[in-house]
Image (cartoon, rainbow, N blue to C red; front, side, top):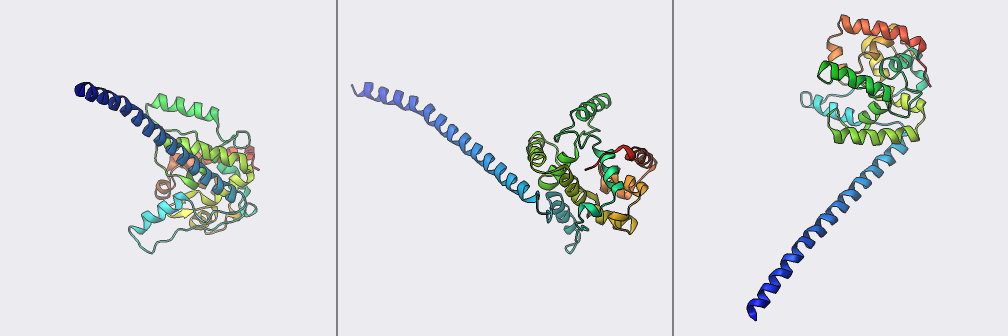
Length: 247
């Protein structure tokens, strides 16, 4: 009788064990889902705030400043916010022509540009073209990092949708031009114009604007080396600028 009782208890314990594990797993998944939703709510709150108020800094700025201070503890970034009206129309057109020529037409994602980028990458056997829009780049600069992962791209897509739904195209371009990286510790159009040309962002001409625009994919590298291929690309961008539509 005792043996039978012990056997019954062991069977009950064995049956209860999977239920306990499944219960813990369910609670863990629920907690993870709630944490993800909470984080998205935090990001949404920040996006709403920045729709009316200018960002003091960005994720990219904080990261670059930390890198600079590993070598120079008193290092500072070059960045000065200027309103949309005080940025040269040439720079606005150049950046759209170079980075996102369908900027006014898409809702955050240029599917045709993504398709072309995938085709170029397949032809070359490696990732050389991105296809990211200005809205996607802004989402990354404000909140994320340059790392490449599906998780980061997914979060970038969610933030891009938030920005596109809550900001005007004019606001998106204004913020992007003020926070984009243009060199080692150089952020925003005003700092870039003064760093490279000793003038304000409002005074940039077509050739200067095109040159700045083509630096955006890799500004720290192109700050050190602006070769003939990049100069030819800047010339092509300058030719297209007349057809660029900006808000």
